[in-house]
Figure 1 (cartoon, rainbow, N blue to C red):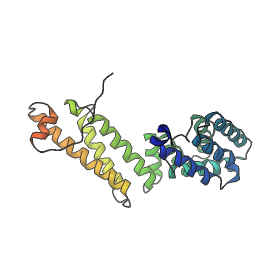
Figure 2: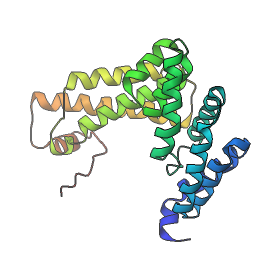
Figure 3: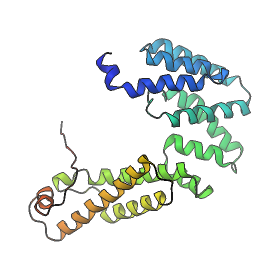
Figure 4: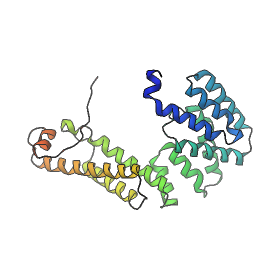
Length: 237
């Protein structure tokens, strides 16, 4: 196995798993073949099959297009490690086009809104989808991850004693993330997100205490008080 395949192993294995899942529907054969060819490193041949799939979908009836779009999205969400799969042509020429037209044609249907929100990871769309169904676990998790990511970004220069953004907004974001994750069924992934919220809250509490009477650099201040944190490595070019 070459080095590129080794470090990207999950992606390549995910592509093969995707191909098998997609092939269950004959209309997705070209897309399944695309995945197999990408796994083999045959990029040019893979995109020929992708283009064939995209051309084929343009000739299908609208209900069939919608059904296929949902199947493709569901297959991808079950195998997110296959990041080579979600190409720009697949997103823009099929998935987003179908979902946007669906949403415009039936503004009261929550399905295209939810799918488009999760596809784009757009906060405003996710908030709309959550209002449509406050119990949607997928939407709740996606929003929680956005809030956690925002705080992670705001704190990643604390190793240099610098906070990015507004501290109160960071606290509110973590509170919102905790609320969104509350009540969802336990899993290793969700427990990891909850731990992220806990650790970031702990980091923010230490930072606020440090700011009241700063003494040296923040990481050293924490170590002197037995406050252990995982610090980002900052690389400047």
